[in-house]
Amino acid sequence: MEKLKEKLTVPNIIILFILLQPIIDIITGLSIQYANATITFGIVIRTIFMIFLVILGLIKADKKYTMGMCIYYGFLCIYMLVFLVNAYMENGINLMFVQVKGLIKNFYLPIILVALIPIFKEYKINIDRKILATTLMLYVLTIFIANICGIAFLTYKAGDKAGTVGLFYSANEIGAILCLLSPFLVVDLVKEKLTWIKGIYALLFVYAVLQLGTKVPYFGLIILILTVMFVCIVKGKTKKMKHLYKKAGILFGFLIVVYLLTGITPVGENLAKIYGDVFPITKQDFQFGKKQEPSKLTEFKNFEELKTASVSGRNDFLKANKEKFYSGDISHKLFGIGFVENENGKIQELKLTEMDYYDILFCNGIIGTILFALPILIFAIVFMRYSIINKRVLGIEPVYSIVMIAVVALLAGHVFVSPAVSIYIVIILLQCNFAIRNDKGEIEQ
Image (cartoon, rainbow, N blue to C red; front, side, top):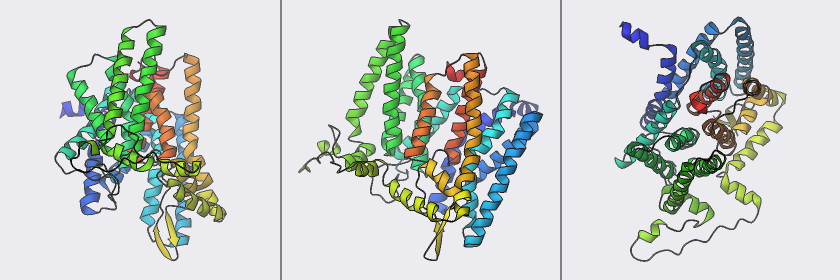
């Protein structure tokens, strides 16, 4: 019992929670797939953890920061109360749980960011990048094993596109996670000696990306490889480290292989449906009998058609929700249109644009958007101040992740407004903060 108490420290609890994320998502996926659950295990356990962090943050913060936390959480509670009152006045008690769940998901990121800042400071928490790489591999192994066993869920429920998502429910969320955590695996392979175990991990990761069938992790992988290649070449030239040229060459060869194999994978099939045959090898090349003529590259008539294809038609929902937002009264503009809509007397869950910047503005209004963005902006200002004072720069892993966070949130969503993804955003941001403020930090090595 004493040994258990010694290990059950706050840093270890946070690390354990990070490592348990894939398990939480598996249970959530199974509960939705087979029990059609509306209150999922994921939202329940992550809400409980959020409350735990808020209470602990208030206890551990210094007096000045505690005052700031109370003011922020106070305004946020007032906003949520007004939001729910508006929702009740418009639609009554109908789908009120959807509104509450939407609020939790949309504000999960700033709430835990504000709470974790004093916790990380008090306990001097430094999450080793290997923790994030291990978490990534748990997602990857689940996708691989479930697919090999034939029990994987389809990425697209309608069945109009190819791909499987393991035992997870949301392919967009899993794709975003693979994209954000990928540099902690890839850079680790480049920086340290390549072993056969790491080689297998890399191949399994590429398999998961290609098998998922969504664009985000695939293009994220391509961009990451190109970025690491560029860094290797620059460092090899400036620091006269010739072995980095060899690694850049290996990465280039690996990139060519990935490109050649893409056409016979689910993500290649899906890209071909949008853009035409852009890969030299397809599944048809391995089929016997009469083969179909290869489709030509898609010729888009204008930029609007290209944009629609690139964002999978999300701009149609964007137009609809934009109209609801601008045509609504002042309460809609200030507090948002919410997460429920009334279509000809039928009250149903609102179809989001899945482009986070717009969803936050339209669903939560101007005041909600300010409350969401305020902690992140303050954190960014303080972070830049310390980086200038300490004359420190970040490594490729967090820089790539932060850039991809901003891009994916715009194009594919399920980043800022998804607790399953936003927990990693907060951890990465706080690790950046640790690296800038301290002489040593795993994330910037």
